[in-house]
Image (cartoon, rainbow, N blue to C red; front, side):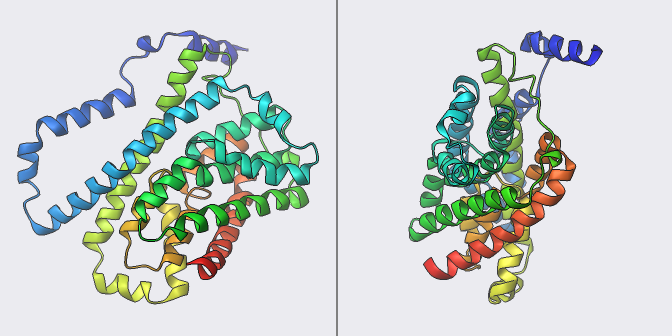
Amino acid sequence: MTETRTVEREVERPWRARGIGSVEVLAALLVLVVVFRGPLSGLVSGERPQTWTTVFVSVLVQAVPFLVFGVLLSAVIAVFVPRSFWARALPRHPALAVPAASVAGVVLPGCECGSVPIAGSLIRRGVTPAAALAFLLAAPAVNPIVLTATAVAFPDDPAMVVARGGASLVVAVLMGWLWLRLGRAEWIKLPHRPDLDGAPRGRAFWSSCRHDVVHAGGFLVLGAAAAATINVIVPEAWLQTLASRPVLSVLALAVLAVLLSICSEADAFVAASLSQFSLTSRLVFLVVGPMVDLKLISMQAGVFGRRFTARFAPVTFAVAVLVGSATGVMLL
């Protein structure tokens, strides 16, 4: 009872009373970088630092607009669209609800950070877990913003957009059907989001935006830095050797997608920068990333429980690698 009252007081407390948050700190850092860009540019006068800075900034500049737009629209959907709408819109038969929920991900312009709490809300509202999980996997990879970002990142390879969308839908449907067959209700811990449930809409909208910006934006910066570091630190001969071996290149980029934990609205620009690798291996990177990465594993464990994540994440990784590889061989 004490914990419940504490949560309620926290929800009711005006956001201004909570002091400076991570979004404000991030904004201040960006302002400082702009103000002191002259002195900072002198620190990167060498060839390698300049290359690192060029790759890092180019990834951020291309990805940030898609990230911001996706965060805003995801917050609108999470706060203003009634959760019961999805339950009414899906077929009652679980086997049919899975592909319907996967296709419904097309209308959710948000990243995987937003799809996890939304999938939890769907389960709480009576949607079959298999359909909610299929929605969770499909939404970050097949929504219009992500597919548009992929087209911008791969202007000379339009088939990458079709391959990414098709492979992601197949993985989502297969995982939903696998859950129907093998999943157990006791593996899932029902979520609770006091910042969205019971709060005024305006405050809930701001909370959702802050949450997604902090998580998605932070991991985007780390992903851009990692991509720039790979381009500068790792010898070109190593990358060429790894890229020349189809199986190793696919596995390497699949694992890299898990480790980098890049937002799905920005990962296409990082994949495009890894030009040493084949389109198939980069497709696997794009299919795996929005479904299995370190931040998603952490978020899923917090929302659905560790027992769920320990079973769901490894199987999703294996299915995504196999489907992505097969799709790349056929279409790219």
